[in-house]
Amino acid sequence: MDRSKRLFRLRREGQAFAACLSDDTLGNAVPSCPAWTLRDLTMHLGRVYGWAGAATRATERPPRPETEWPPDAAGMADHLLAQLALLVDALEGDPAQPAWSFAPGHGTLGFWQRRQLQETAVHRWDAEAACGRTTDIDAEIAADGLDELADILIGLRIAEGRLAPGASVTAVSDEGGRWTLGQGEPVAEVAGTVSDLLLLGWRRLDADAPVLRWSGDVAAGQELVRGGLTP
Image (cartoon, rainbow, N blue to C red):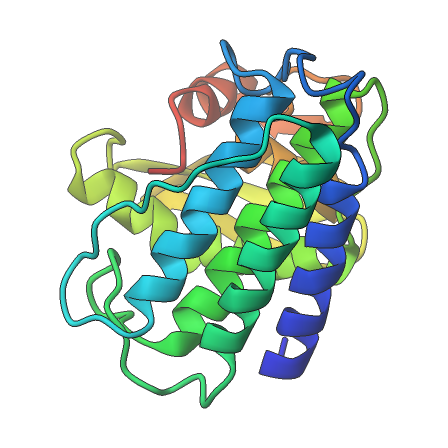
């Protein structure tokens, strides 16, 4: 996915997140983020936007920004969208432009263009879940996210010692994509929509969800996924 598509979809996903905010929903629990309310999730996403924007101009890890948030939903939505606009401005540019990154070997603006789209799309799904409804993640966004997971984030998880490198799961989407999740010999294969596979990778969908179809050593594959594929 090219830069213009990523930034357009980043704006769209951020606007869809903001549309979930009302004075009636801010206190709702977020099922996929235990102990967080929708207010907490909104503040988290806004802080991530500020931090990622700073990272695009940094040579070392920037501090996490702290900002004052309005108490009401309309004010929070406006503040979040203002943070999003600043982030999109920071992300405009050549994807190959150097930028600080927490992923060794991926210190580019393009890393952040994709990472912030993925952050927003998954949290938009979280916000909708807090309001009792969900919409699938766009298939092109989800495929881009599985590329990120397979090519970058799982490697970070292994480098942290939180995922053993000796096994993997093959993910096959109904739309035709195929990814190796993990490092080592595949122990199982999981099939489903590309949106459901991304949600599985981010632990938003349980490994034994009925929408997923497993083959091979199912128990080993599900255990690997439940152990966490993301940093």
